[in-house]
Structures are given as structure tokens and as C-alpha cells.
Length: 246
Ligand code: PTJ
Image 1 (tube, protein in one colour):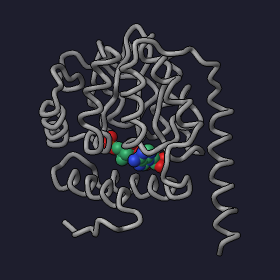
Image 2 (spheres, protein in one colour; image 1 turned 180 degrees about the vertical axis):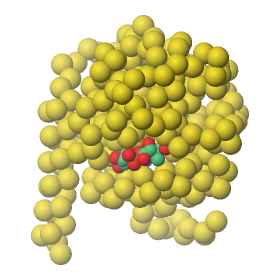
Image 3 (cartoon, helix red, strand yellow; image 1 turned 90 degrees about the vertical axis):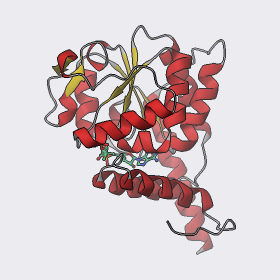
Image 4 (cartoon, rainbow, N blue to C red; image 1 turned 120 degrees about the horizontal axis):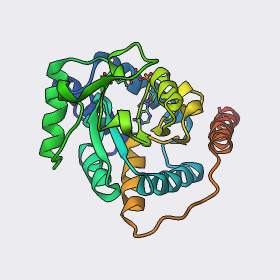
């Protein structure tokens, strides 16, 4: 592993990258997950590598939605498991959500590695591993169509982090409410979800856990389209500022 000087101006970003690389070496992260992370890094840079006011609003709305769901499910892919294993368990506990492993590039080896890290972090029950309770969700071509009957299939709210657009669209067609983390406010998932948290999942998950731990959550008049526009303007402002200083 590379030696990162503590004084590096982008230390956090480099530490997150190291977690992904370690996750890849340990079979958690798909090769394509590294590419997805690179795309995320670029957007994070454009957003100033900090949690914006609009992301904080989305986080509050997400906590409210999760706490008021009948059957909420946290969908876990390789990148999410490598970056936030502890926070996944904490969020599941505070919001009474189920945890389901659901992979785009699905292999038994990766499922085992992801299960191992979630269990090590305190997970008791993990869905998505038992073929007997699996069912196919229509409208998805990838391995992500295989879901658990008692999990994603019957959920009313699903948290889908760092996601490809097809599944978000299919889940919306199945009348589910979708919450996502996506640093790219222009992605299909970001544009299709009910709540898009445009922030690095490593920062935003910590805040979502804190928000969900509170006894009560406010039901704000949250508007995802409006919120996404603010994120896009944020990027534009940052670019203009950089161009002025160039
Ligand atoms: O583990 P698997 O097999 O299920 O595969 C997962 C990946 C991530 C490979 C798969 O879902 C994928 O290809 O996703 P996409 O289509 O590349 O979309 C990922 C989105 O997440 C992109 O819009 C990225 O900008 C964004 N993103 C990447 N890293 C982060 C992020 N958003 C928030 N926080 C990040 N750290």
C-alpha cells in the first residue's frame, strides 16, 4: 500500500481510495467498482469535497423516510461494503431496516467476502444469500434482478447506493421509494430516485446515522429535483471560481 503523507492536501480522498483498493484486493470490490469510484472522485472534487447544505437536507429527508417505512431495505454492493461496513449496520439498527447483498457483478466469492465484513461489523441477518427465498424482479437484465422475497422484493423503501440506472428505474416501476447516494447529480439514478444524497457516501453515511439515531425526524417539504438543481449549480459555481483563479 502506498505511503500517504499526513500533510497531503487531499488526504481524505486518498485514504478513501486506499480503502477501495484494499476492498478490491480482498474480493469485496469489482474491477468496475474502481472505475465507478474514479468517476465519483472527479465529482467530489468539483463539489469541493465537502457535504453541501442541499446534501444535508437530503440526508434529513432520507432519515425521515427510512424511519417511517414499513419494510425498508439497505441494498449493499461491493463499494458500499468496502467503504462503510460499520455505518451500514448502525443505520440498519436505528431505522429497523433489513440488509440485502445485491451485486451487479455477482460471484459467490464476492458475496462471501461482503458477508464476512458485514458480519465482522455486527450484522446478524443478511438477505440476498439464500437461493430458496430469491425471486426475479422484472425490468432488470443484470444479476441485480435476483432479490430476496422478504427483502427488496417486498420493500416499500430501498436504499441503493452507488447504483446503475437500470435497477433504480425498475424499482421505481415496482412502486418503491428509492434513496440513493450519488456524487453525480446528472446520473440516471440520481435523476430517478426520490431522494438523492449528492455527497461522498463515506461522509454522508456518518451523517445519516447521526440523523437516524435522533428520536424524532422532521417531515420537510423535500423536493428532489430542486435539490439536484442546487447541486448542479454548486458544481458550476466551483468551476467558475476555479476558472477565475486560473
Ligand atoms: O459491487 P457491484 O458488483 O454491485 O458493482 C457496483 C458498481 C459501483 C460497479 C456498479 O453499481 C456501477 O457500475 O455503478 P455506476 O453505474 O458506475 O454508478 C456509480 C455512481 O456512484 C456514479 O455516478 C459515481 O459518480 C457514484 N460514486 C462513486 N463513488 C462514490 C459515488 N457516489 C457517492 N460516494 C462515492 N464514494
